[in-house]
Length: 70
Image 1 (cartoon, helix red, strand yellow):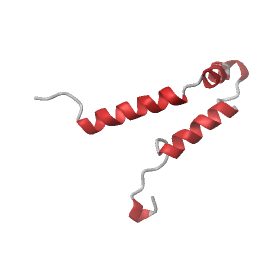
Image 2 (cartoon, rainbow, N blue to C red):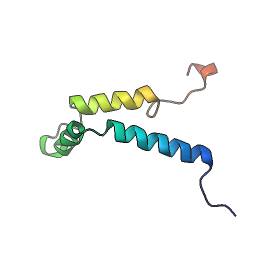
Image 3 (cartoon, rainbow, N blue to C red):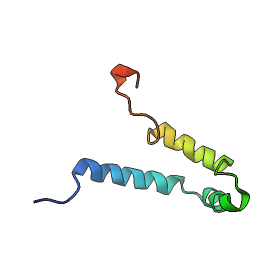
């Protein structure tokens, strides 16, 4: 029995890790570290940029099939 991840999931994991490594800037980390202290809820410019990048790549948007408007 093979308990490993299929190649498709391993490739997605590698893609996601690369994306995070590219997006995880010192400015973003500093801003997020101050979220609790400022109670900003992660709504600063770096967090907004990061969420935009997530959306652009389709990581946080609905995965509707194209035939249904996706």
